[in-house]
Length: 583
Image 1 (cartoon, one colour):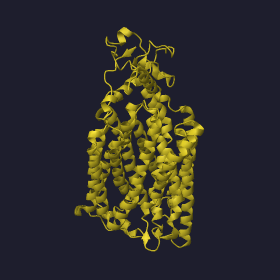
Image 2: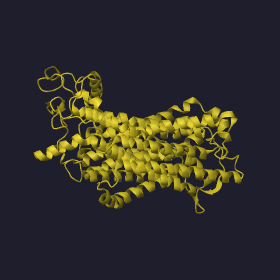
Image 3: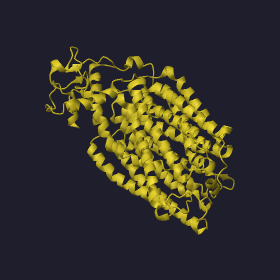
Image 4: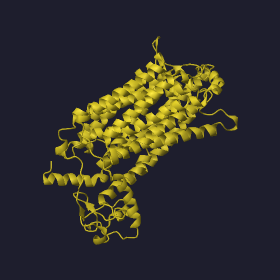
């Protein structure tokens, strides 16, 4: 039984004069300047919290984990708002303005005389402890308000920007569309990598050399430029309408399948008993069969109106709606394997503290800022993505027969294995650094500089960057490829949501380790004094969790099955359009 397709997205004829490569610079520039601004703030924020707000290392790390969690949770709401109500353009525009407000508030924390902080910590940390009592509660609201506004803004920009860019290029009847989109994803992530390199070098250097007010002011100015550039491209964009029934449609499938749970499923090839949309998949898939009961037509006279629509959408859903919900449910186990990736990536504040106790000189005059060592991870990502896209993929495609070279799940799995190696290397380096510090008589001085080059930290950063290049880009492309086009923003936001969960898990791990390792009067693993603590034990613990996560990924990957099954109905629709001669 079919229903008319009354409301469709913009047709190719309507949008053929818009979109294309012309729009990409405006969209990418918006994301680049937002990332330069926000990453430049986040990279050095552990220093700002410990030296200016006098937080302990563990407390500062927990604050950053929570801030990161909120920042990564909100994109799922931004994605639902985009795909269901406002559309991607409006959500990106609103998010950009809100992020700008947050950065201005952060600038005020460093410039307003009313918010002047107690004296800086001494190198041994003693004055921090002594002056903690002078930090009044009213000094924190503006700081946390700034974090909140920046999180809300990121929740609008990050889930929609990539999908909005793909909207400008996506031509489903183009035989090279899959390879075209893959190149877009790779180079989009590369451009973000370059922006983060600028953030953790130039912006962080300005913060350290010219002070926090100027450093935060640069970030606010860049965010203002981001807003202006994005809005300038407005007349050129393809702006697909939001599917206002999408979210309610998913809920209707759940309710309808529960109401019809006692019905017997008809044979899978029976067409007349399934309720479907015109030119879409007419029979539900065999995956998650219990949801198929939501689209069974029991009595056409009672279940359908005269125009073919469902008389009660909460008792009868379309096959398309059922398959949309299946695509979300089937992805969840594989999505959960990315949580550990987020834990490892979001613990990069710890190497910043380590670098602060090591020799960071390049030559006799220049000293690399501690927060800038993460540039080696970004450079690794950028270089590898360029090599992979232009050199490796064409050769692998001839061997594997896949346009992408490696499968998306294969790339995700390789990334997870590299994370195990990266955390093991980090633990080994910290063990050497701590032992060297003790041998040099710095056991009681956690801020003393060890006669050991900070370049020892470079291998773990490079391995982490390579793991990101495989796993994170693979995740993003996987979600975009496996979700229906109408849910593209939600699909991409799954990555950010996983990062948010990873932040919370990371916070839980830190707090648990703090509590357990400090038992019976012992010095905790994450003590403020790195030389008394055991940060290497923390790294070994995360390495163990990464190994367990790899085995979990293998189970989830096998249970998921082949890639692309979630998009079968859309592929069939494309074939129907091509056969009918539609442009």
